[in-house]
Image 1 (cartoon, helix red, strand yellow):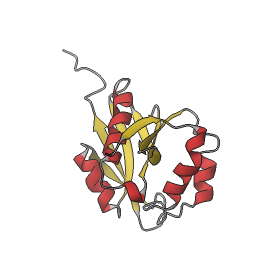
Image 2: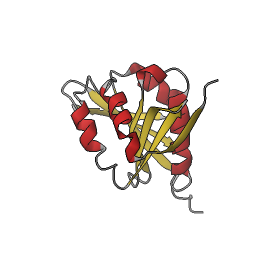
Image 3: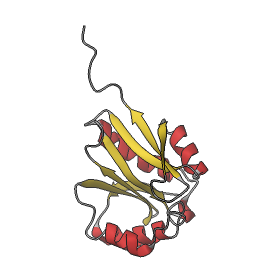
Length: 159
């Protein structure tokens, strides 16, 4: 039986998280390497919520949320290990992060690379709207697409 849990990331998870990100697209295509991820996670990202999903005791994915971005929060990173894809773990991880976010704010933003068809389908299925492209944002000739999921307007309409 497959057993998975989502919990806060600890320093003990660093090596597993760096390994799963270093070996995965879209980050490889965007030029990120293990040393980049190692410096990102050393120390653990400050002022952010970092969650991991574990499958049978093995770290299978990572989500990092930065608070206070455009009247909401920003999903800075979401990644699932190649061996763990297609099992619903990314959705489980994202749902957990969203529950934390929507308890305090109305919007969660994310970005996805324009060439990342699998990622774009995933976010659409999870209820995210594509707001628009930011051309040449990370690498030349490619756009990052800003995404938003919302729990409703920030302000109530005045009478």
